[in-house]
Length: 208
Image (tube, rainbow, N blue to C red; front, side, top):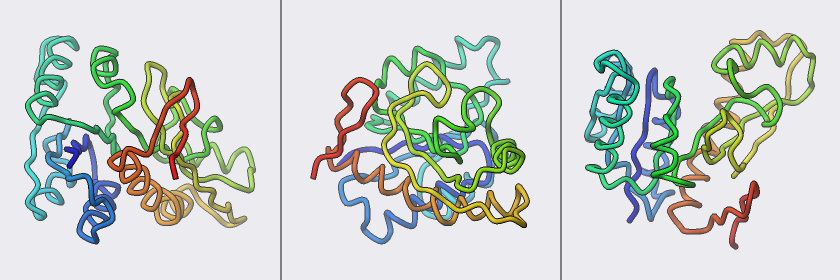
């Protein structure tokens, strides 16, 4: 059984998708063992507590330097015996020290079809605003491993979502969550916990 530690900063809708999947037995070889928030007011903490999941609050502003914050977060991950770290709306960039310690053990969900509309500055509604401004007909979501470059790690799963002519950033964001993010994130977590993912360079191979 793999320990899944989820890092959050906000509402925790993707955390809820993982909790729901776990309750349905869709992640048989994994368990959400801890939720760590960078924001003490994050509603994701309420979701965790309502489901009996231990929580920690580690806020960057509570530490004098980025290094001391990184060390505190890394120590917490060690203490939780994290096998998989899931970034679910986590608004703090992880230091390379953490990425090196957990190479190909950190996954992120991004609300576009990488390599489009991703990288520095593309997060939240900004992604969907850019999609609508560009006029693309398909967007979606991507689950990928995390490396030292934003949204550059090996892609695990992608799910396309149609863009409607009358979409606003808000309606598009909601549909991408419902039709893509909440589906492929639990799937990717299950694949990891089932030992079915193999990274070869920038490509992820999925075992049958």
